[in-house]
Length: 101
Image (cartoon, rainbow, N blue to C red; front, side, top):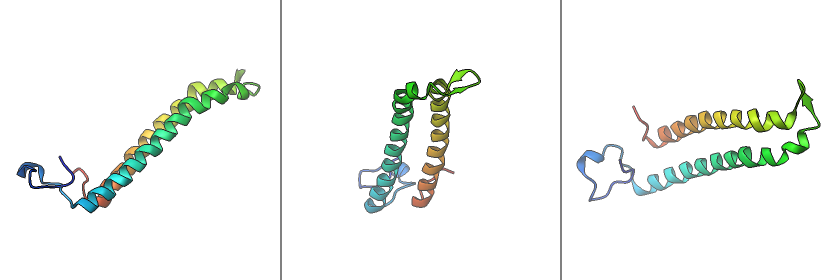
């Protein structure tokens, strides 16, 4: 369903139509959120693993800390980021009146 309505938009798809300025503001916030989550993903995917060898001298329950950060920490970051992204996107949708019922 298009966010911005124009003359070619079918009548059935005009339910969540907003004006162009509102649509651009919505996309600016949505794309900003997307780039933030991608940055978090990049750091959790590559950054933690690049620095894991420096954390290996620290041991927890006999295992090096780098192992925990690479194997478990990044997965926890991914799950938390997904829930945060969903919550924040819903807030943006409600702010612009395009939320799902």
